[in-house]
Amino acid sequence: MGHGSTTGAVRPAFSTRTAAPPHLQRGDSRMSQRPKESADDPEHGRAGTERRQQLTRALVDMLPAAVTIRVTQRAPGLAWPTPFARAYDRHGHSLPMTRTQRICAARWIMRGFAELDWTEAHDLDLTTGTLRRAVDAIDHDGGE
Image (tube, rainbow, N blue to C red; front, top):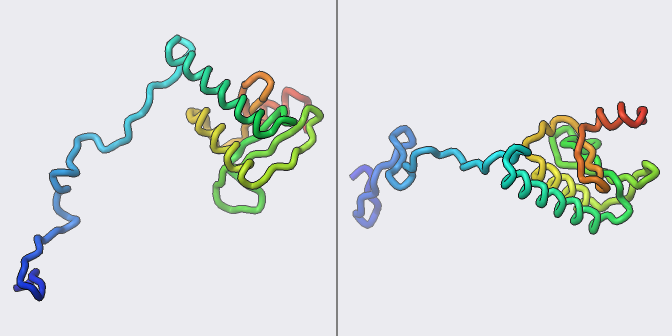
Protein backbone atom coordinates (compact mmCIF):
# COMPACT_ATOMS: atom_id res chain seq x y z
CA MET A 1 0.00 0.00 0.00
CA GLY A 2 2.96 2.34 0.39
CA HIS A 3 1.37 5.56 1.63
CA GLY A 4 -1.62 3.94 3.31
CA SER A 5 -2.24 3.80 7.01
CA THR A 6 -3.44 0.93 9.13
CA THR A 7 -7.02 1.97 8.41
CA GLY A 8 -6.50 1.56 4.69
CA ALA A 9 -6.91 5.31 3.93
CA VAL A 10 -4.44 6.66 1.41
CA ARG A 11 -2.61 9.86 2.27
CA PRO A 12 -1.71 12.16 -0.58
CA ALA A 13 2.00 12.31 -1.26
CA PHE A 14 3.56 15.72 -0.70
CA SER A 15 7.04 16.72 -1.62
CA THR A 16 8.78 19.98 -0.80
CA ARG A 17 10.42 19.72 -4.20
CA THR A 18 7.13 20.17 -6.05
CA ALA A 19 5.37 23.45 -6.64
CA ALA A 20 3.53 25.09 -3.76
CA PRO A 21 -0.05 23.97 -3.19
CA PRO A 22 -2.65 26.14 -5.00
CA HIS A 23 -3.81 27.87 -1.78
CA LEU A 24 -0.27 29.15 -1.23
CA GLN A 25 0.23 30.45 -4.77
CA ARG A 26 -0.60 34.11 -4.28
CA GLY A 27 1.71 35.88 -6.71
CA ASP A 28 4.20 38.17 -4.98
CA SER A 29 5.01 36.67 -1.58
CA ARG A 30 6.89 39.72 -0.29
CA MET A 31 5.26 41.75 2.42
CA SER A 32 3.61 44.89 1.15
CA GLN A 33 5.53 47.98 2.07
CA ARG A 34 3.90 51.16 3.17
CA PRO A 35 4.69 54.22 1.08
CA LYS A 36 7.83 56.13 1.93
CA GLU A 37 7.22 59.28 3.91
CA SER A 38 8.71 62.33 2.35
CA ALA A 39 8.72 66.05 2.91
CA ASP A 40 7.67 66.35 -0.76
CA ASP A 41 4.50 64.36 -0.07
CA PRO A 42 2.41 66.46 2.33
CA GLU A 43 -0.02 63.67 3.20
CA HIS A 44 2.55 61.05 4.19
CA GLY A 45 4.98 63.65 5.53
CA ARG A 46 2.34 65.02 7.91
CA ALA A 47 1.29 61.54 9.05
CA GLY A 48 4.91 60.62 9.67
CA THR A 49 5.49 63.81 11.63
CA GLU A 50 2.42 63.19 13.78
CA ARG A 51 3.50 59.60 14.50
CA ARG A 52 6.96 60.75 15.47
CA GLN A 53 5.53 63.44 17.74
CA GLN A 54 3.32 60.80 19.39
CA LEU A 55 6.40 58.60 19.80
CA THR A 56 8.30 61.45 21.44
CA ARG A 57 5.38 62.18 23.82
CA ALA A 58 5.12 58.50 24.77
CA LEU A 59 8.84 58.37 25.53
CA VAL A 60 8.65 61.55 27.61
CA ASP A 61 5.76 59.99 29.56
CA MET A 62 7.84 56.86 30.13
CA LEU A 63 11.03 58.75 31.06
CA PRO A 64 10.06 62.27 32.24
CA ALA A 65 13.60 63.35 33.19
CA ALA A 66 15.09 62.25 29.86
CA VAL A 67 16.15 64.76 27.24
CA THR A 68 18.01 62.39 24.91
CA ILE A 69 17.68 58.68 24.20
CA ARG A 70 20.55 56.85 22.49
CA VAL A 71 19.47 53.78 20.54
CA THR A 72 21.66 51.00 19.22
CA GLN A 73 21.45 47.35 18.24
CA ARG A 74 24.39 46.46 20.45
CA ALA A 75 23.63 45.93 24.11
CA PRO A 76 26.73 45.96 26.31
CA GLY A 77 28.03 42.47 27.01
CA LEU A 78 26.06 40.76 24.24
CA ALA A 79 27.61 39.41 21.05
CA TRP A 80 24.35 39.39 19.07
CA PRO A 81 22.21 42.33 17.91
CA THR A 82 19.62 43.40 20.47
CA PRO A 83 17.61 46.66 20.59
CA PHE A 84 19.09 48.77 23.37
CA ALA A 85 18.48 52.31 24.63
CA ARG A 86 20.04 54.63 27.18
CA ALA A 87 18.38 57.79 28.45
CA TYR A 88 20.25 60.96 29.40
CA ASP A 89 19.12 64.01 31.38
CA ARG A 90 19.77 67.65 30.45
CA HIS A 91 23.24 67.46 32.03
CA GLY A 92 24.20 64.41 29.97
CA HIS A 93 24.04 62.01 32.92
CA SER A 94 22.71 58.52 32.29
CA LEU A 95 19.28 57.85 33.79
CA PRO A 96 18.24 54.52 35.32
CA MET A 97 16.01 52.42 33.06
CA THR A 98 14.50 48.99 33.52
CA ARG A 99 15.28 46.29 30.98
CA THR A 100 11.71 46.61 29.66
CA GLN A 101 12.05 50.37 29.24
CA ARG A 102 15.37 49.93 27.41
CA ILE A 103 13.99 47.41 24.94
CA CYS A 104 10.62 49.15 24.42
CA ALA A 105 12.16 52.56 23.84
CA ALA A 106 14.69 51.13 21.40
CA ARG A 107 12.07 49.17 19.46
CA TRP A 108 9.65 52.10 19.31
CA ILE A 109 12.33 54.43 17.99
CA MET A 110 13.68 51.89 15.49
CA ARG A 111 10.17 51.27 14.15
CA GLY A 112 9.40 54.99 14.00
CA PHE A 113 12.53 55.61 11.95
CA ALA A 114 12.66 52.29 10.09
CA GLU A 115 14.33 53.77 7.02
CA LEU A 116 17.59 54.46 8.87
CA ASP A 117 20.72 52.33 9.06
CA TRP A 118 20.52 50.90 12.58
CA THR A 119 24.00 49.37 12.53
CA GLU A 120 25.06 52.72 14.03
CA ALA A 121 23.84 54.32 17.25
CA HIS A 122 21.38 57.23 16.98
CA ASP A 123 20.28 59.91 19.46
CA LEU A 124 16.67 61.06 19.71
CA ASP A 125 16.32 64.58 21.11
CA LEU A 126 13.06 64.50 23.07
CA THR A 127 12.75 68.29 23.14
CA THR A 128 12.73 68.64 19.33
CA GLY A 129 11.86 65.12 18.18
CA THR A 130 14.88 65.01 15.88
CA LEU A 131 17.01 61.93 15.46
CA ARG A 132 20.65 61.99 14.41
CA ARG A 133 23.55 59.61 14.33
CA ALA A 134 25.32 59.49 17.69
CA VAL A 135 28.64 60.17 15.95
CA ASP A 136 27.21 63.42 14.54
CA ALA A 137 25.88 64.38 17.98
CA ILE A 138 29.29 63.82 19.57
CA ASP A 139 31.03 65.85 16.86
CA HIS A 140 28.44 68.65 17.16
CA ASP A 141 28.52 68.77 20.96
CA GLY A 142 32.31 68.77 21.13
CA GLY A 143 32.90 65.14 22.04
CA GLU A 144 32.07 63.10 25.07
